[in-house]
Amino acid sequence: MNFLSDRINSLPTSATLAMAAMARELKKQGKDIISLSLGEPDFNTPEFIKDAAIKAVQENYNSYTPVDGYVELKEAVCLKFKRDNELEYTPSQIVVSTGAKQSIANIAQVLLNPGDEVLLPAPYWVSYSAIATLCEAKFVEIPSTIEANFKITPEQLEKAITPKTKMIFFNSPNNPSGSIYTEKEYIALAKVLENHPNIFILSDEIYEHINYGTKHFSFAKIPSMYDRTITVNGVAKAFAMTGWRIGYIGAPEWIAKACTKMQGQITSGANCIAQRATIAALEAPVSNIQYMVKEFLNRRDLVLKLMKEIDGFKLNIPEGAFYVFPDVSFFFGKTIKGHPINNASDFSMLLLQEANVATVTGDAFGAPNCIRISYAASEENLREAIKKIKRVLS
Image (tube, rainbow, N blue to C red):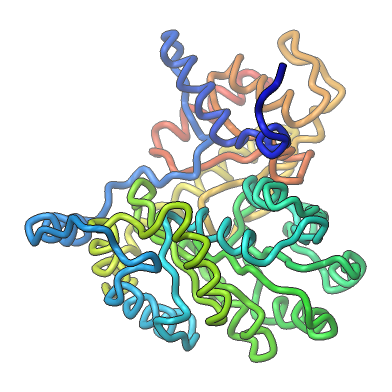
């Protein structure tokens, strides 16, 4: 008999975490697995951030933190939003959480009712659909293609909206595609949303600093959208602080208060030491982390160059984040090394079992023709991984 709740039974396992676990298990068995599945920078956290954390320990920061974050951190977030995004927020509009994932879950929980619809421009991060499902809302995919650089059009958006639409999730730079919406493209999408005043926008900007020339534009900067947009960010990706677990939002004050109320009953305030370290991260000039961005750009170019040498991968040029998202539908219907390839999941498993390279199927991101390859790995590992993939596919 199954005593688990319908809620947990309806929830899929995170595909990225499942693939990472599979890769770890194979490593334990002695296989030389190269994992390109997780979206985790392979850099160490910068020294100036670690120093701030050590100082916080020495100054005896060890008590419960305010549910919505230290006021000094919320002030630093406000300054960051003004400096980097030209967005005006006050500390009462900021909520600090245990990672941007919790920020997103809070927002969904306080805005969505059972039966509401959430629009997800595909491809989208795997947890968006799961978080909507947890809220008993229905997620509606808006598909895109590699030819369109994985971006949706205003016409597609208009067509997807129904009387039940409550939210849309935007993510730029995008995980998994690396695509970036320009100011002009966002303004065109906002024009559609202006005609639907009851739809809220979640703008996930966690990869904002990892971009290669396309200027980042925040959706909340569009005047007609400011009061309906919740801007989500955090320090995991750009500052190599994935395990520190700090995310934050800038939102209309009534939404921020509701998120604080929700968080107060689930986790309370985020880790005290990580919050003090995050103040140092956000107050520092963005130039302090450019060495990582430069290295990601070198790796992107290397991966694209090497993958172009393999027949069957359809590639575009990602403008940000640290992923390539090739269309692999060329291989569907073929049998490779005894493995029938019917979809991207089969293809991803082929690469794991025969090339010892872990990737993630595009099915999990609402793009069933693609796989996600993370280049947040060393150049040596990237070269070796693609060499192994080439060997299997030739």
